[in-house]
Image (cartoon, rainbow, N blue to C red; front, top):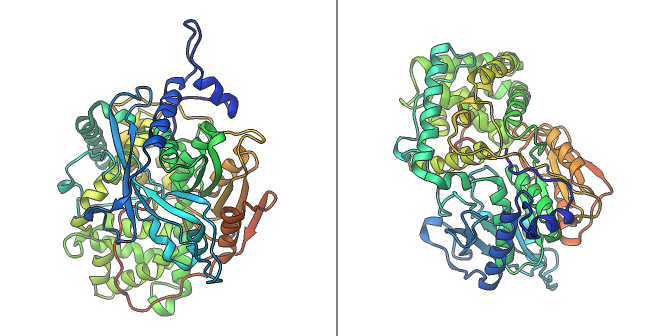
Length: 538
């Protein structure tokens, strides 16, 4: 969770101050060179446009999706310096009303999407137009996805050889020993050095502010005078940066599963809050499993289900399943259940089968897939670089150890795993930036829509409340008693009704609205094929 360069909340006044050249040798406002560089890059992109054609085979996209590239400066303070290319995907508006085949829907422009991360690619996004929940939006908008800087083929970032990225089996102690901590500290230092060695001076350019600037260049390249944008998870954070930096360029913005943008939270404290929230969501999952003890036999209470999980972890520590699934892989598989409740039946069945002597479902869901190593390593590298570059992190291990030892006493499930993911930031070799004070005043941006699930663990609900306070005129729609991470276009018709009304008509409730939760998943006694994933995006 990230940011750079301290600004005020002045909206259009901010833009005027930053774009104006300093007179007579006066000192330029912070970020003035970058904002001028963004204007230069956007003008070039607007003139050049994007040449869409067949997507390269490496993108693995169907024929109906078209691909292109847009050039952006590596360093916006030097817009005439090194350029990098971002990959873009698009499906044009269908103009087809799914409820009235005789009605031609007028086009409203491009709807740009970012799925979060940092480190996630949105190149697949145009495919959602085929889903029933998205067809009304696909009729009115060109659906546009892209890979942010560093991701995929967009000036890809790497911190280690992908061949060695997956290490399995691994341990996942909830209360690690001092020797284990020293081992992980050494790994974090080596990883940070690897990022610097492989990226060189370009490493400092992977930031949330640059992601926001890239978004404005993409807007111009698409021929859009104003941006219509949906950001999920981390995408809400640099979307909020965009609204603060370029308020006059905003048409409509959706913030789905909002990151807390408070500069004091970005990113160290946000990660502490995330670990605490995962404990609650882990309990939700175990309570659901307990309600279906007749199906899974893992225990009739959440505590009994926990003991079943711990029993499996102990067995895997002694003898990894398939030679590759240890406690670390088990924890990673069940972490994904904290993000998405549609994983619950698959994970519960796999745990049940393993304890009954059949490890195959667990191996299928939890083992690392070597064919995905390059993508996973790239995503991890971008995640690390952006979060480490964006803000100050504690550089004294004693601070990390103190804070997380305390937290792990009440929230052991995710706490130390989160530490090891982010610890390279303690030893980061690139300059740290100061988090932007995200804030807009009355009338500075059009009304925006914030969507949040009340029990979301990856981006705790307080983040949505904080973003709502900071974006004047924003509206918050809450899915009560639910915790799926990202709810736009999902299984809740109430949420989707608000989404469609806003993006299609510009219609919003007054300040806040609530939706009842979507139905809980139904238990499945047998495991079907389910593609294993790495750590889900924020």
